[in-house]
Amino acid sequence: MKKVFYLNTCDTCRKILAQFDLTDWELREIKKESITKEELEEMYEKTKSYEALFSKKSTQIKLRGLDVKSLTEKDFKELLLDHYTFLKRPVFITDDTIFVGNDKNNVAALQEFFGV
Image (tube, rainbow, N blue to C red; front, side):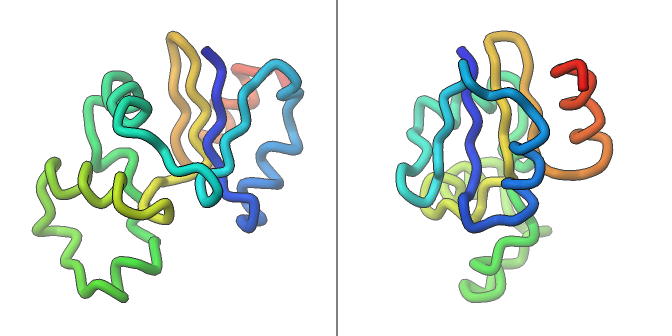
């Protein structure tokens, strides 16, 4: 399995994806095709945390008046399935590895993974 979950309108996602040869990867634009419960569970198996997959920068947090500090793992899971902007992106997932988000360390790990 080689999948990338990203948002096409996100400049950061596009910039990160452009660095790599993704010809044999399945590209999933999460606004057009939401992640499934099964896919979220695959991600959870690798991260052991729904919170690790959750974007604390989502505009939906303020719109819904959420207090992120009070959320449980169950809450994170439900929110991730409810709206695409809650997923920290991009997410690169293989059979063995997962790379979540766009922070410097994650991008550096991706570059090492791809040999860039």
